[in-house]
Length: 554
Image (spheres, rainbow, N blue to C red):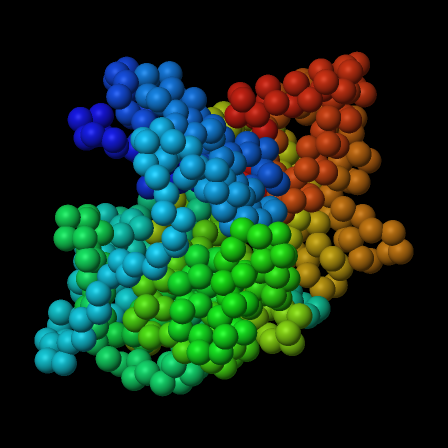
């Protein structure tokens, strides 16, 4: 109906996830676009895509929406923008936006004033006399949904799963790798091997307390942020009424370096002229400003607390800060179990993220640090994890007799533990199970060989027909999974070419997945007597047919 509104314009910001897939909240829109034969003439639009060049299907959603809207008769006002999160997404957007506005003004015959203005979107209401039963304490959707759980469970209504087990997987080294088991009994949650579990973490209470302290705020004040646009569907930036403490703990991202728009809005509160200018410069599109933002914020990994600490004159009102900070997102993990064997549990394999920044601060991963401290305890809330399951395309072949080649170094082993459990179960049911081949890699055999005993047992029982393990640091020259693939190239080609094997790759997208793919190109070219372009085409066809699947992250 936008075409009925005079001078209307729709701007689509489309993120791409997984194998060129839409995000959860764009799925319905994507399905509609694919099936629609609607006439969209009269609709004026522009698209900005959010992607990451590390991945095979870079910005597939942005490109699709841009092309499809035009096919349906809509009018493109400005060219497609492609943001790359492997570089600097923020900078890509600012560059696009700088040319977008003049194009819009020209199209609609509007003159830009050239003045930047700061307008609050929400107004603060402090509740002094409030019924505490009406106050949100961390729920994602329905009030009291954590006290009174009702299926079905999803992103807006997560299930509170008890942690049944939390054990350290590695025998040594500086890192902490862990195996967790979440109890999903009586939740009606169903999952399949290869699916992802989404977990809603909480921020570290000491970070929250320090923000409250530095801003001189009573964090237990109950407040609401109400949208000043009464017709907007989004009444609040996060569930309200709630306390500042709850908002900073469960609803807001306080650990990632803030985007430039946040710095721009905060600048007005810096009483020192130098600090104010520095913030404005970092939020500008000038080359010098972009470079400063990159070094001082992004590369130094300064979160909002670090910025407040390093700019003593910057003391914004906490309500405006809460309005500006992005929402704390769910974290996704590849499920490390099979529902055929563990119908009432979901297993997670994860590594805690902890590193020192250039400013000497210790930064910790939100979700992994929080999960590390979750201990099995029947009654304590410290064992509860808000979660839901997200379906994936990463699936075992329909026929158990089809061979599978699984490549997953590090925590990339997770979905394959589920796959192997499932193939073992199928074998017990008397099914003919094809070759099950694993290529796994870790740093050192005696340090971080994950699930060593389980894998040895599966190998001994004959479920796992091949167990190939690369220990990257146990010898002078580094050995990775792709080196083992090259070593066994004849066997690989036989499984793929004659056995119609399915290939699965899980783990790091930036280096490992790319190197593994290049290795497959080499093997196909050599044994299939193909040129490089033909080999690339062969592997791409395997992907299209669902015989080469990726579950990767960067």
